[in-house]
Length: 349
Figure (spheres, rainbow, N blue to C red):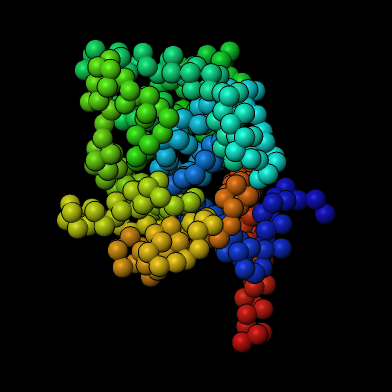
């Protein structure tokens, strides 16, 4: 019989063991948290914007399933690139078999390969540069100071629709800007436009002071976290590792120990990563380790999905969007799935 929640029902029926079970349980707990009025903070590393995560992330933002973001500078700018230069991208499905000579040819075509796709130099980087650099120069002249993402918010909100090549409904940056979603972009210097900005600072055309620092990002995040963690609290949903995840999750112990103020712990934790657990690997550390750093507690629902985020995250978001549109049916599906699991566990024990 047809259902209005095909993805949620598929996960509930088929995802029983291994990473599938972790995916199912993380999905159910995410919905539990949201349906009780909780919020969710996303940390997005890697090249998820080039992988078109916006197809599901943008509607999730509009639906109130995502309430804050920590993203790399690359993910921030690449969401914009997909909006303005989508038709000029080239895909390379056979990239695994490329030689150095093959990639040199791609370089000469002024394409920047990201796994199996590529960002067009002229239609993306240089087209955006023509808009963004004058914004920096104006800020320098006026002595303005902003967070890195605020320049991108202004840019994407001011772009005429005639400049859109990608579907604006699938641009997470546009959705976040319209919602004025709180964002941190730690390590934004490590991005193409971070490099471009540095060059204009070197030439004396722009002041480095027009961009607020990472320290100021954290100082501002203290207040955002306190606001977002009210009520049922805010969960932490992490894709990949690195600074996009490391930076924001530290806000809890920093408020507690550095500000010496009361703070609520993260209410949920899930990481999708292909980094295996190993000695000294922060990205591959089990969530339990975070208890010792006072970022999570033993009562925090914790999940690790050791899989490809380009497969898992869109599926989870789609199921959550289904649940948001049909909450009663979603609750019934989840309740039935949990009851069956509980019955099986009782039997085998």
